[in-house]
Image (cartoon, rainbow, N blue to C red; front, side):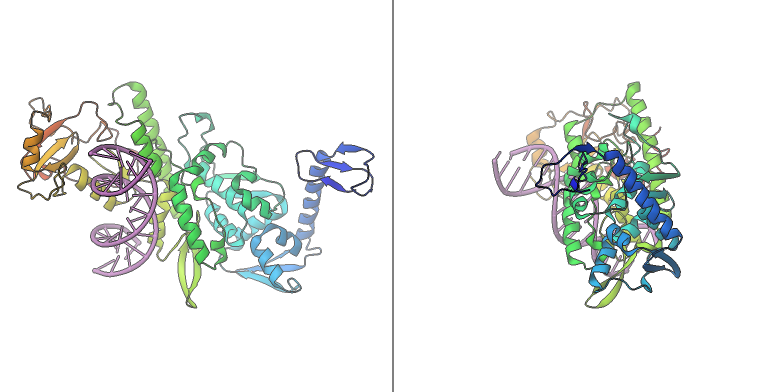
Length: 470
DNA sequence: CTGGGGAGGGGGCCC
DNA sequence: CGGGCCCCCTCCCCA
């Protein structure tokens, strides 16, 4: 039976054994038969593996021996493909490959996937499986893990497709076809892998964000510089940089775009907005929780050895991308760009940051007018000559002459309503610091105004669950 | 349309 | 290991 059109939508087989240039006698669709055949074949192979029949290679993982078929491994893993093709006569029957970079349990999950198409993922093993898959260059497994993680983190699809929001199930099993991973699929990327239902569609649109482009570029460069098999696997960071917060947890470009697009969001007040806020907060809390879970479950296998000038250097590999860092703490910091976690909210404007230093910088620049530069003429000012101008929660300095030119009349003096208090620094519950339609202005000659007026930076690392609720 | 500046994000590394 | 600093990059806004 000759395959005429294989793997296409219509699997057409010729019943006769004629060569292709001859007229076919009859055609029939054998898609069902094919699926059934593949399934049976895989089942047979799996049985053989379990009974150690015809197993022609062995894999040693931390002392535990796994028997398998080299052709199956070859077909499933880029790593094994490389290994087997380097060896002149393939792997010998003796122990052929050994790994210490992941656990036997993890390899067992992957081997089961290779032989069954079933990937037994849980929140406890997903990172390790993903990292191992990265090492073994199994893009489809990586993609499933990414989807799994994404489904864990992507919990705020409340806008257009809230029904597709998925909470993290403790354990789930993704199913694919055979454990194949051909080069076509690698090139086609994630879209070529059948996604778990309802997990995929949304974020494909995000994959074109510029944030992703930036990182992808960087990673591409880095991976080119590395000879580590781990780093040869190009994963698409974007699917994981899954922002769910409408504003603050978006990756840079999108967030700014959203910020610019919705430019100055309306003051809070109506109930739908409040509900939305609550949703956002809830989503944030869940995201932070999942991020913590991820951090907690970070396995030691993220450590990889790279060689610089033949000196082995221990580095920690990001399970989401090809980036490696020297220190685990740096990896944790880096992971925030994947998890979207922003633990440092600005008390003045509620903007959130991934790092304390960014928050501090933002606060000093935006809310404390620390820059001794006239905003209008850009000239250097001193604490004495630079008058602090307040615009909403935003503060900056203007030199005396610019202030006179602009005229205090043109600067709407702030509506303090006689309270004598700083209006907009009262925890900025209006949200975005520039988001007020009713801008509050004031000129203050007190250089220490910011410090004295309750505008101190209150550093507060939150778990997202209960802050901003007041 | 374009270039400059501001703001934010991320990496490396020192303390 | 966390905090902090420096640097670089990107994006957006605005003149």
